[in-house]
Image (cartoon, rainbow, N blue to C red; front, side, top):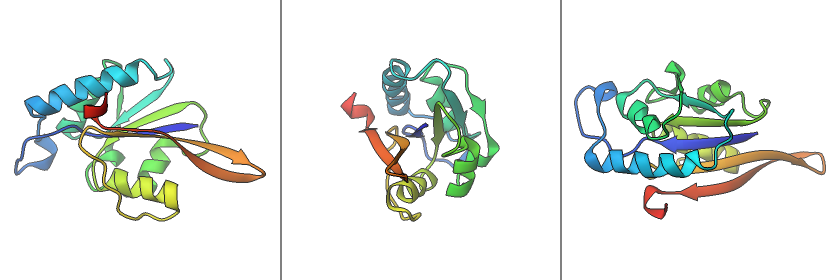
Length: 150
């Protein structure tokens, strides 16, 4: 299974967190990363997105249908993110579009075995995969990119 963590792009400040929209910079970041992802994602990849406006707008940069999942909202527990993705039991590719610190903590959990803080830059992705080697489950880092790198 491949699991891609995509942090929402640059967003405006605001008092109502769920309604914060992307800035012009954020829209450009979402389009750049969305274009890069669109060229590499399998057609049957599941795209799961936080209900927050900035995450919805980031996912729109992919120009592909997606599913809004309430459990990916800001402040989500890494366990809820894993449950939504069905990691590691599902097959195929799942793209989660969400927020810090949740995505960073999930990355820490998968890469180091504990939900430690790991900062993902706005608009960045981590592409992970799982495999079994010599009877042991492993997490493989396939890509780590910021919008400025694509």
